[in-house]
Length: 118
Length: 114
Image (cartoon, rainbow over all chains, first blue to last red; front, side, top):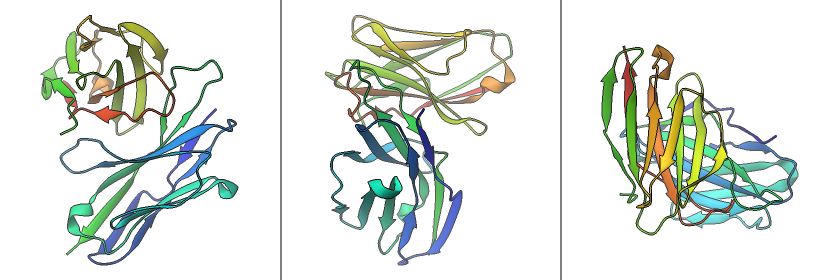
């Protein structure tokens, strides 16, 4: 069974600080996909990144970066120079590739609430 | 704007009632997913349809049902509502029916059962 753990329930930082959101996952599959989503106070879920299990390269997108480490089953998310607009709940998710192909059932972590103070 | 629309945005009803939530996927997307987000359970996958056919089932109660119509919009029917059904219900869509497909979420329907 797949499982995603986001141990940090809430993180509070001051603007311009760097912050890392942790995500640890469990899966028996060798092929799987990891995602991060952002849920701002407005409530909508916004896709941030998708990473497949064969690509361990770290990714950077502006102030956002992701560190994927298969050895520790982690897919951590760092925001550099945080801003008030980054305040949101961030969800990590895991999707396994089924041997029969087709449909999958994604599993989400419980989310980390990030509060960025001005 | 993800391109996924959901109606209504808010719904208040009483226990024992039945409601229908509607979702229109992004143009061209064939897969529709339904999720429930509650304080107790977090984000939970309910059910997936692909081009009109049910493809995957998650933690969906027997009191709940869904369908996807020929025009690809989907409806989630919740019946015999209980207080614990109060939650945010999200719909998402993706282009194909594969594990790595990125899902785009609608704004959600907030259901309050009194």
